[in-house]
Image 1 (cartoon, rainbow, N blue to C red):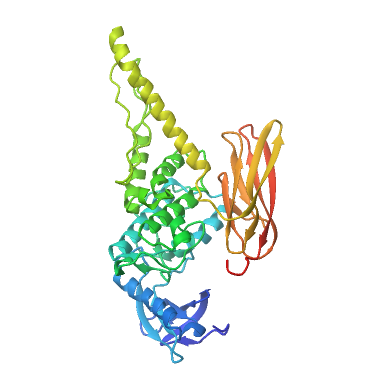
Image 2 (image 1 turned 60 degrees about the vertical axis):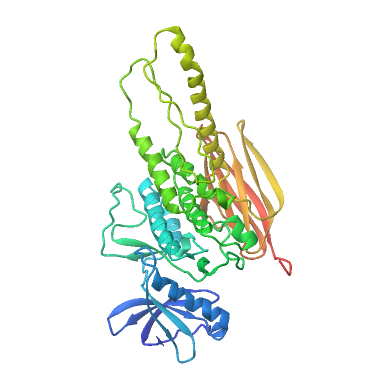
Length: 448
């Protein structure tokens, strides 16, 4: 596709180009017949006569026409230009995408609220559920493919009015870009390798295998990515992370069948937290309940605690209860340890070469950073920082962009060259240390 801006696409008057990729460009246009602004996705002229690409492009329009969800972008029309380029006319999402919104707000010190996170999860659950009911798998759910549109409808989610909302009450979040969507009802689960590293399921990138479980994984990764911008001190963060665990399983057979299951589990965990208010002292305090994660049918559920009643006064009764008390303590320790481990290792293994390690000590407190020394272009490197419990992390790229506020950060190589990431660690003592980790992005060899 040339860089010249067309004046019209079919009967639609072009205002500006709002996006461009290798296969298509998206333009904001005016439908003069209805006096309405729309988005027109135009297949690149150099692909217009490629039968496979053309078929996949038009398939996106057919998929969107079939799906009935207010959280999936709608297609209004399809057509072909005089030069033979097919186009789709879509509803215009005029407020950008979730990735850009989050990074823009984070530069102002903003952090997502629990309502922000639940709103994104609810949108994904509804949209992905609508796609799956039509036996369609998106295959490329990312924050950049969640678009924001002005809406006359008011959100039913109530949030703290003193904090900037991620998605305002007069805005709507839409799942878009179904260019890689696949109809798994056609009889095969195998496909070409496709998706975005960091959000695509491990089996999708390794084997090209496509089931609806890849969307469950990607949706959970988007929520986990958003949680990376929330303070570790937020009391709800660890519970939401615990609720995401089944959906982030490496083995797709261990994942729930839908994001709705994940949504229900997280709501239950948060409701459990809010209901645990202080009770009048009776001399006996029941142990805290562990997070109750809803698992898929193929995964055995975690053990539950025995509810304690008023402690008997006789010694024989105490002996009967003692084993149960010890079991409850063990269950709590296991669950807490599992959640802590997951917070430290929330990403699949990323691609890189020659794992490096940097250790820095500040007044007796040690920070260890591990990561690849070389990352091939278009592959993702994973960097992990270990520091004393209670430390806070801020990862920045070479140009100062904040990548993550957890102990893990991922960076995708764009072009060959020497780069660096730095992590600013604030210890519980309020002392700070900055660790700089240099690495190199290398060109992929032919055939990779």
